[in-house]
Image 1 (cartoon, rainbow, N blue to C red):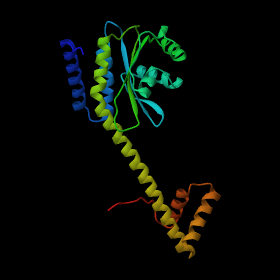
Image 2 (cartoon, rainbow, N blue to C red; image 1 turned 135 degrees about the vertical axis):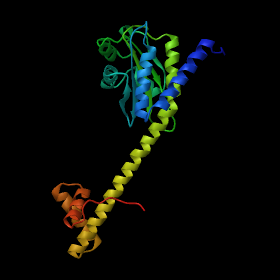
Image 3 (cartoon, rainbow, N blue to C red; image 1 turned 90 degrees about the vertical axis):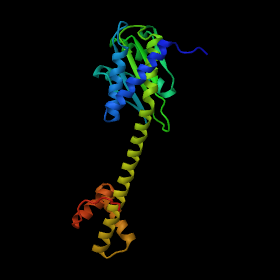
Image 4 (cartoon, rainbow, N blue to C red; image 1 turned 60 degrees about the horizontal axis):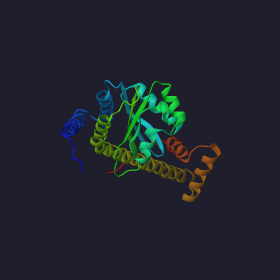
Length: 249
C-alpha cells in the first residue's frame, strides 16, 4: 500500500484542526454544521471555480438540508429532492462517494442534470457521512459552476471534512432521536392522564361505572368528530380542572 505523501499528511492535519476548531467554537450542532458547510465551500473554491455546499440529512424516508453555505446552495439541494434522486441522495442512501465531473455530459440522472445545468452548475461532488447507531443517512454536497472542478486533492479534502465531522453528527442525530421519542412518550402519557381524569369526572357526575364512563366519552368523541383526548380535556376543564400534564416525582 502506498503511504500518504507529506503534502497529504499536511492536508489531513489541517482539515482535522479546522473541524476541531469548528466544534470548539460553536454552541450547538446546527451552528457546527453551518460552519462546516461554509468552510467547505470557501476552502474548495478557487481557480477551478466557485463552490457551494449543502448538507443533506435523510431520516424516516425523507431528506432535508440541515445546513448550507448559502441560500443558493439550499436551492440546489432542493432540485434533487424534487426529482427524488441524484448524486447527493445516492451518496446518502448507498454510502458511496459520487463525483460527476461534468453534468452537461452525464446521463445518469438526465432530468436532474438538465435542471441543475440550467442553474449554472457543471460539477458535483457528494460525500457520505459515516453515521453510527441510527438509520439516518447524511451527505456533504458540493457544487461548482465549472466542469471538472474537483481534482483528487479537493476530493480528499472533502472526504477529510466528512470523516472528522461524522462522529459529532452521529451524536447529534442520536440525541435528536431520543428527544423525539421522549416527546412522543410524554404526549402519550399526557393523553392517558387527561382521559383517565375525565373518566373520573364522568363517574362522579353520573354515578356510573368506569365502563359506562368510557362509553360516554367515546360516544361524545364520535358524535362531535373530535379526538378522544380533546373531548376528555373539555370534560376536565368544565369541571374546573384546567389543563393537565403528567408529572414525575
